[in-house]
Length: 234
Image (cartoon, rainbow, N blue to C red; front, top):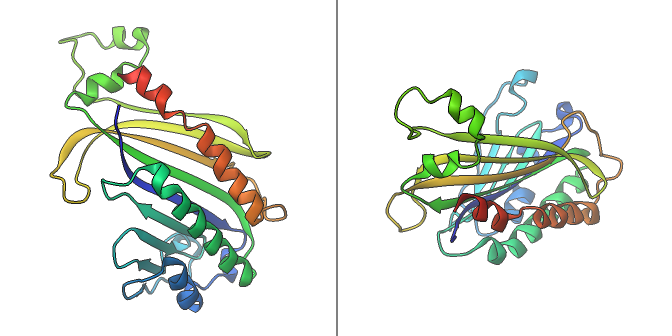
């Protein structure tokens, strides 16, 4: 089953948000993005409950690369254009990931956690029925009070996993969506999200390095198993 890449995202979570002032690193962050639009700097009050609100946002001229930085985290995005596949964009993602991590290290901002998310779109006019295939028969039987046709289905499932010797969460979700990517008109279908991230209470700031980060991403990709999801759904 053919899929369309929506985006690839890397999240780097800082150990100490109180020491992060993203507006000081704009030129370096812009260098990671490459040929970019005017960076957006947002005035956000220095309050703990607002630590994850982006303070700096930078987008490339072609809208394929983006960086959001808050006091708590830095997020790198590689956006799909409806043409290039995950495999084709993976080298660019790894390159930008290394560049971003180097910048963060240069400013001595320890990273305690990693998040790696990829979203794939599948064209499907009967997405609710397709998603419901992974829902157990016993659950469906409880719901049989009317027509045996689902009108809305959403699946989210997570397990503990050890990725590159880091305690992690291995999460998948399926949800109905109508999207438009590139020049293609809006399409109905479903989004398969693969989200692999280190445990929320973890602090790997002492062991995270460029090599460790690259190994983590490669190992995470190796368990995406898109072909197995596709076989199950279609």
